[in-house]
Picture 1 (cartoon, rainbow, N blue to C red):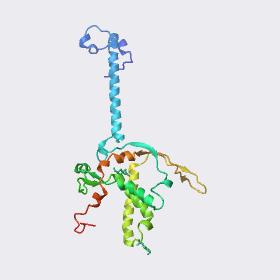
Picture 2: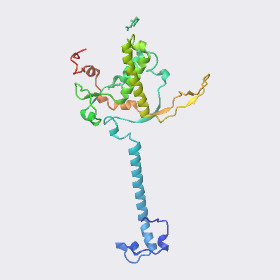
Picture 3: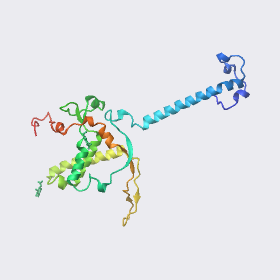
Picture 4: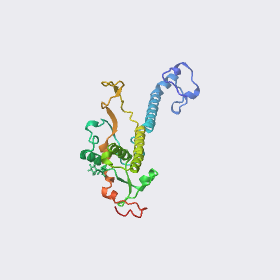
Length: 257
Ligand SMILES: *[C@@H]1O[C@H](CO)[C@@H](O)[C@H](O)[C@H]1NC(C)=O
Ligand SMILES: *[C@@H]1O[C@H](CO)[C@@H](O)[C@H](O)[C@H]1NC(C)=O
């Protein structure tokens, strides 16, 4: 049973013999002396228990809520995943937006240029996945985020399809729509999955608009440090040549393009 050391129980109530049992001080010890002697140790023990309890609580909370540091939640070891708060790019000046220009095409090209990376058989096995073998060793992969970016690029091209996909046949159009639907739902999933809870979207009254309008004033969001993430796996980049050299071994007529 635990004692509340603040209560003067030893001074008022007679104690059972067992309460005095202590090898070093077995004989004559009044309750008061007993209390004086042991309270610092009891206090220290309480403090140690408190520290252990606090440490354990923090550890459990971290394990359950703050998984950023755990390597096994990332695609492979060695990725730098650090968070910082920043504004999203201003879409009006975004190099990725606007009508198709050589500059916007180049911006997209640069953004997606380094997406092909080399992973090992063990890294794939850790996810229960397989992939296409690369001629210079390892297997071809993208980080998940590049599937999303690929979809954004696809949707942008579709919104300018007269430019990017001129004169589509009905059949080609239908084929693209399946891809577009896939990308829309992939991005919807990505948004729900990542669930930006770091910022509020707020509203405003705009001239001649009868209903509240979303305020696109930019605020800070919790974001992965993109540059740090990209440089953390630069050593895995697969060259464009290596990727374009890949041919489906199951197709007889795929030897060259
Ligand atoms: C792509 O990788 C190269 C080589 O590591 C690097 O110099 C370049 O800055 C990277 N580009 C982007 C957009 O990350
Ligand atoms: C698309 O069709 C238009 C009109 O039929 C034609 O002038 C143009 O050259 C075609 N564009 C391509 C890329 O085939």
